[in-house]
Length: 246
Image (cartoon, rainbow, N blue to C red; front, top):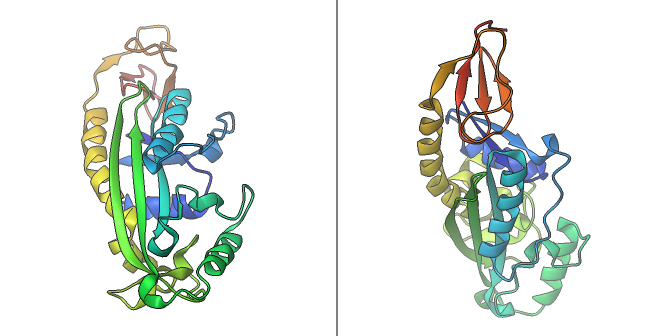
């Protein structure tokens, strides 16, 4: 079974992505299980650049395929702000409430017709060898005058989905996953993951030599990982059957 590293320590994001990848023959893990992997500085000039950076280092250091995203809210009345700085709009250590408060302050006095906004999500799926797949999802809407709803996170309480007449935070998780920018990007990524999972299942298998199991992958040199009665390479998917199953 393929292991996929979600390059995030955000439990809300990990839960949302996990729901949308349900049914795939993939075991998900997050950066919480890799404390040695340092945080990536999101200093890119674009969402695409940040998504690439956030996936590349975890993939390289873990030996797993890694999935990362960068999401930006682009408000037309603010000339595309907060954009690539959406997560840090109110400052480097701000929380969701602070970001929402600043956004509302910036839009004070702006009429509803000029509060058009687009949520963009760029996802990067990167392998340990550096191969990267990029996909994007977009959702158009409008910024409301006060927070509405208790679900979701980030700017969800302020982002009105015009076709629903509700903010993202007022929608159920299932309804949000049908139309959100992240779900649209992830649907495209999912097709790539299906192929990678199939490749992993079809990886070459050999019997371990008598007297023990080799500790490193003969294909790429990474340490093999115990998995049921086989040992797996986290990098290339090589599988070695155990002569003495555990």
